[in-house]
Length: 431
Ligand SMILES: *Cc1c(COP(=O)(O)O)cnc(C)c1O
Image 1 (cartoon, rainbow, N blue to C red):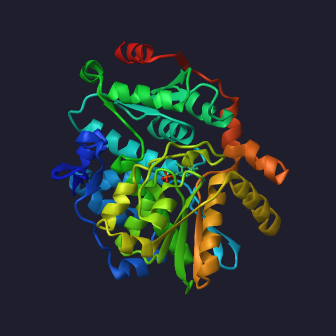
Image 2 (cartoon, protein in one colour):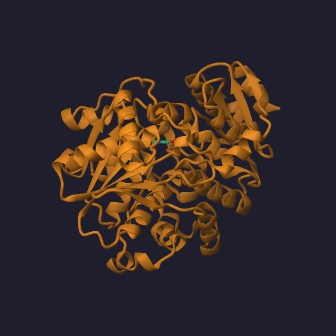
């Protein structure tokens, strides 16, 4: 399979190249040249297949022969080593829990799969040693650290803003050791992001120490997210209703992977992009005008994105046709107060504890179902509520049980290197 640049359809690269490079020239995104449509028999037999088998059949064309069958299967079995349950909430609503992975957020799947692919390419070939450099505002750092831990030939350097990530998030990215280094930046997330960008365009660094990024623009982080929708469908077999998925969205990688799954034949009737007040897509569907704005802080902080990078991939899936896109996609946006109210209401009514991101997804789904009662709706729970402990406990006025994996990480000793400016980052990378 080849991937083309969304800025220049004549610029095509292999899967390996798209993974190693991350971005096409001019900071453009890569997109698969073809989207395979899977057979009716495959969808009918889904309930008899294991999740590894489903994932293998769904992704093999995208990988092509660049990773052999054994290699790909072993990457998938490591990536999918936990459950993806759909938990019923009410008569017409369920939630797909994506937080049973090692760092309790859905980014584990993409990070683990990318680590597997990059590790495979480094081992096989002539890439030499690679450094993954990534800035995090919270969840990405832990997922990437965990995914790449111990992968030979790859070093990971994570920049995070001092004092601006939660205690759990900080422990998840500072306690692993081995090939993972955490740089604690005296500044905010934008400072971290700026330093990373500067390092990518610094030739002295790239000669001495080849860098790659691990955020959701990388095809190896984006594509495996389609699995969630196949796994949910498998569990919903037998529901006669049309299916709608509500996805709490920030950079729009997850929902875009769901729409890709639909294009491959998965019978999903409708998508809802649920936003917090960073609502460029909600406004776009209302006005046909795409007007990004600087991001604002909210309690669903992984969705504080003013200009979602993956939205161009959604437009490409719909060949830039507004009308066909708007038939399959609705979008709603909610304030922090509405989000808190939803967490409280669902706990009281259904005894289910949502995190703030899942709560935004829930709200979007309910608004859609109110107008479209013939659907069965699934909202994605993208993080465990424990990751947003203060917010959630404050709202439900109860303690949230801390999973054993988190208690273990909280006991470990934090190790980080403090830096304050770009020169210190460069010095670290060049040593
Ligand atoms: C990253 C993240 C999101 C947003 O996902 P996108 O693919 O960027 O739209 C939502 N919820 C949580 C908890 C996340 O970590």
